[in-house]
Length: 236
Length: 236
DNA sequence: CGCAAACTTGATGTTGCTCAAGCTAGGTGG
DNA sequence: CCACCTAGCTTGAGCAACATCAAGTTTGCG
Image (cartoon, rainbow over the protein chains, first blue to last red):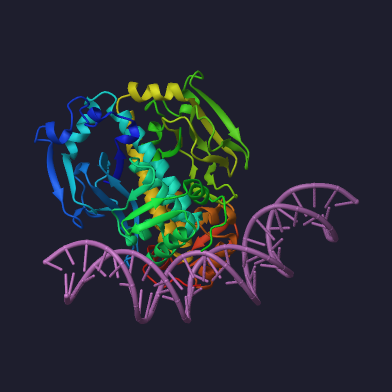
């Protein structure tokens, strides 16, 4: 089975539709314990490991996780960060394809796989909803491939910051960055040092501000977008 | 809408199950023309372009296509190669997320999107089958991210050759490579020159043979696999 | 306040890119 | 049939972006 991140937000559901049951409200609060149970994970704790048997489906109620794969010598690539509202859909194979680890304090709702699969047949439109979500995940993956394979360090960091800003949405300027520089590096195919240097470079050029490492503010969104798209010179 | 490649082979169907209709045989031969039509494309011809409206679903009957995305300055990343038996599933958004171009002579079966969506509701188990296929695509995409973000040139080329060998399956040694060096480069996040140098290096070390550029033979599969996984020194 | 972990900055090194020639193969026309 | 021509492939020399190695500096927590 295989870990797929599916965002409820992606399929454009209202808050009350978040649950797989539609109108029943937050699944964590309303589902029979037979098919669901609530879990908490502290930062750094592991939810599941690449290669192990996958028998559950998780919905993230609160917090952020990193999903990653390792090469034998320890090189790591973070395939994605997932947060509130996403499903970790352990797809119809039996092995986890990535490792999932809590970045922040995380609350999640665990469904037994068999029961979850049952819902696909029972609940009308649920399969289609998952299909839409899967398609969106694939779209995101394609963009990430372009980033990893063809963008410069500055373009990578700019793209990432804009993506984070978009999905936080709340304020236009400030981004809360819960993950470490090392996580960013392993997500963008760079090193910690290059992340740090690139952020400093963006700051020096007035595109962003860094009051504290964990808080990044976007000062010139237009130029950052131009940079992210690859539309201008991007050398440190 | 968004181009997703779904392989029938991936969902483990027998030849007679290849069609979306299950037992009705090859869709190209048996579906009512109202919802399907047969098309041919010559090498280099475009099936659809990133950003354009997507109103069809295609099944590849024969041949190979490349799917790619471009940056404004022309940098290209090929997200994948798809061939016989795969669906180009233009997912439930309205815009193609990649461009699809024929590499070889291609025959494909085109379904009207609306009719295809209808099948998801009508044909029992069809949605689940697509879901499985989508999950597999996502799995492949994750592996490709690791390749693009964390592997060396030699590891990238070795991984690619093994993947090609696996999906051709027929012979254990020889791989027919229908795509150009330039296509390989844009799929692996390298340049043509690096592809060429790396292949020469693999040949010099006795891992492969190159009787003609279009034919690559695997001589030492074990060492190639060790290299692809990142388990040994990989310097030219 | 002190300590460890995370982050930043600098100096140096290496992989893979760029630029520039040759080489090879396949197709065309004389 | 062969010479030519072009597109694709290979090889070489030099270079640039990013990695590595090595200090410092800040941050956050006990």
